[in-house]
Length: 91
Picture (spheres, helix red, strand yellow):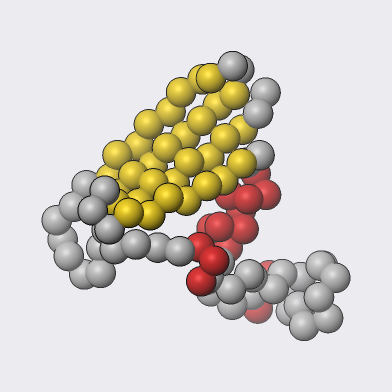
């Protein structure tokens, strides 16, 4: 929330056609995950990857883990309605 102490986050879930869907919504400033650089992780095909996890730079790991663990991850941004993150794990 950019330093603001007031604000709310709504978290919900549902089962839809056997798929587990999690929705997280807030009214903080908009966030575009495309602006976050992809993490350079050890043991991937990138020659610039650090040799161990202790050397991984901060940033981008949360998005990386969501994309690796869930089948679908979508972000929706609206200056008035807020931000919505939806994640789906298919059955």
